[in-house]
Image 1 (cartoon, rainbow, N blue to C red):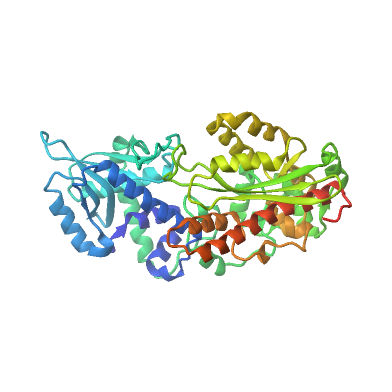
Image 2: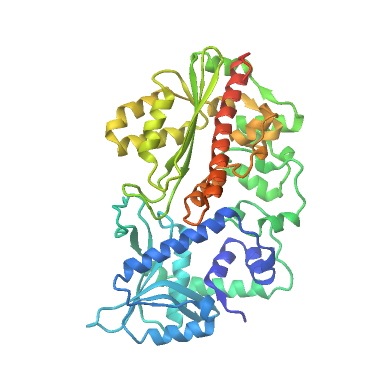
Length: 499
């Protein structure tokens, strides 16, 4: 019988096939950049947790990957004999093993027991965290640990970093002792069922579906897709929230083709996506888009932001996961049809927020519509800047009064078969303006890559030449975002300007 780690048990909870592949075909795993980044964030938050729970640095850090698991188990048992914090303590029992983030001993004048804290980089307790905690408690207690309590510590997104490397208050604890202790039989059942899956000689049958991304993005998704018959026109292109009856019908009949989606279970937008996709004929109500834009006269502005967020803030006055704008592009379209761009990009490593706000006000002038694509993002960032910088607040909030969102106009009145159920500007642009392509850009081609480029530009070891290259890539990417909106406005408004 194999000893299954907590992560493998959680993989089993998500999908039995994922567990089997984790054990028997690990080479087929291909984690996304987002998944890899989440691992890095977890390590960073774990480092902060060790500082917070062991301010005198008296604790023991066990590293099973470096020491080997047998040595880690032995050192854990030896460390339990002394009253100091233990990090990454290792336990195995009942066919499973678990590594604990934080172990704190009871006070010296009490019988020796231990308090366990699992640290997560999320901003709330999730259902799958409760499974995680249940496994940790079961394995540790089955291994003989005198466990008095177990808690989950997650990031407090309302906490504001005061600076000076002071992270007290970053984590918020939730005691889950009673719940975790009560689920021992449940965990024992998971282990037995997982062991049966692992013992199978062949891959379990399991079709891809929504479970592939919930609660974690599965690194075997591409592998599983490669072994399945792929839809010519996927039913997954149906946008928006699906009715429960649609979910059930699709699952019950193993539907993968869009043509098989029952019209009676689709809303109006989903029916349009199905009809356009099957017919191959784009839907465009140009009269409606022109009418929607007719009230907004030139000059007009087209605005886009790029932001960065940190689980562990690095700039005073900012919160965990707060979207900090570091770049904008603003295109101004004059009454004469002249197009002029203004851009801002701060790669100094200092908090760019105040300079960003001042430059944005200068770039957007005093009057004229400000077109964006998905207004909730930009207007939220502007409101946050206004809260942080009261002296600029009236002028910043006045910008929001001028914002016009192109996204709902596109969603209501335009759909092309190439969009595959998405109205992101990157899906819309190739359909409306085939002469423009994000794929033609060098380096940075989406928001995730922009964040990566920003972080690389700020890294101490990045050369001046590489920073200049990254700066050019970021400027080109953000400029295309706003120019794409200009072209979108041109098509929707029916303008004859050559832009």
